[in-house]
Length: 180
Ligand SMILES: C[S@@+](CC[C@H](N)C(=O)[O-])C[C@H]1O[C@@H](n2cnc3c(N)ncnc32)[C@H](O)[C@@H]1O
Image 1 (spheres, rainbow, N blue to C red):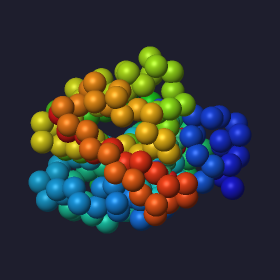
Image 2 (cartoon, rainbow, N blue to C red):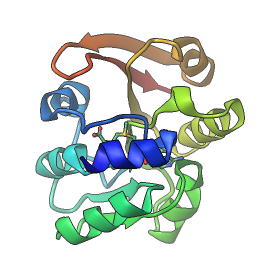
Image 3 (cartoon, protein in one colour):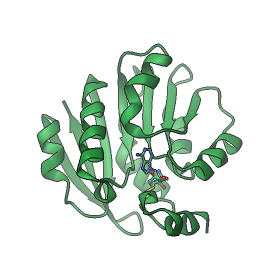
């Protein structure tokens, strides 16, 4: 219910319910976690992906979770007791400042469930520019969407963009795997 309520209040929530764990595993289950020092999640929501990422990460790796919605942020902070996680109540384009604050130059991977199609062109561009700027040269930027409308935009920022489709979610989703 909390998704529906927050979605009615603000469309930038981008969904009326949480994504499935299966979509998360399809998206980021096969990343290289063994060498990762810091992973960034954009749009934590109610934390379905956050919990899955934490299960896959090593004990030394840090997870920075960006979530603009204060209600979700407070829920995440109270429900996730894991010293590897920092929940950040700020917008995704400020990724660089928080990486620096935590003594990291670049993110090893960026996992995004941001509702890009709901964003202004300016915000979308700013988030993607910052994501490319602060992603490791060998890292992946993963993004899911309900429609494949941002493929060309992602192509304009990343050297390689692979698109897959997962029916293990309602609604089914397109998953982009992007590399510099
Ligand atoms: C579609 S929901 C996905 C949430 C969750 N990861 C999931 O898959 O169930 C998108 C989330 O992105 C958050 N969000 C929207 N704009 C954002 C921004 N500029 N920066 C960070 N988070 C944002 C929304 O508040 C919402 O919780």
